[in-house]
Image (tube, rainbow, N blue to C red; front, top):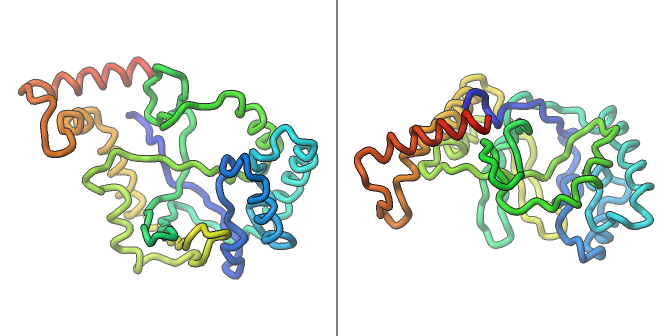
Length: 254
C-alpha cells in the first residue's frame, strides 16, 4: 500500500464542561423502526449541545420533517463551529467504551482516506465494507453533506490485527496521555473515555503498525494460518505465492 488509508486528523471537541450525555448520540442508522427512541433522545438533548442536533437519524428519512431538519442541521453546525467546538486534537484519539455488560471496547479515532474505500462487489480496496451497502440510502446522506461544515460520521473500521500491534500499545500507556472526556452515554449506551494521542513518536508508531498490517507479505503469512492453531495452507512456497498474488491485486485495483 503506497499511502495510508487511516491517518491522524484534526479532531474537534466541545469544551471540557460539556457532558457526554447528551453530547454523544448513537449512530443514525440505529432504531430506524423505533422513532420513540429518537424522541426520547431529543427530549434529553433539548436546549443542550448535542451531536444529535447535527445529524439526521434515518428514522426521519422521507418524512415531512426531513427538509426542516436538514436546514436546522446546517445552522447548528455553524453555531457549534463558532462557540461549542473549542478544543482540537491533531493526531488520534484513543477511546475506551465500557458497555452495560462490562465489556470494554478499545479504538482509535482518526481520518479515513475515502479513495481507499469501495463498496462495489468484486473490488479489492484497502478498506472494504463488512456488510452490503444499501445504495438507496446514499442520496439522502449526500443531502446532509451538501453545505455541511462539520463531519460527524459513525464509522467503525476493523483491522486484522491478531497480535494486537495497532491499538493495544496505546491503551497500555493511556495514563500518560492527556485525558479528553470521561462520562456516561445517553440511554444506556455505557461509559466512554478518551485520551489525546498527539505525540509524534506515538503517531509514527500507529502509522508503522498499520503499514505493517497492510504489507502484502505479512498478509500472506496471516492467510496461511487458521484459527484453532491449524494450517490450511502449508506448502513451503505458499507465502511467496500469496504475496505475489496480493501485490498483483493491489496494482490492479489501486
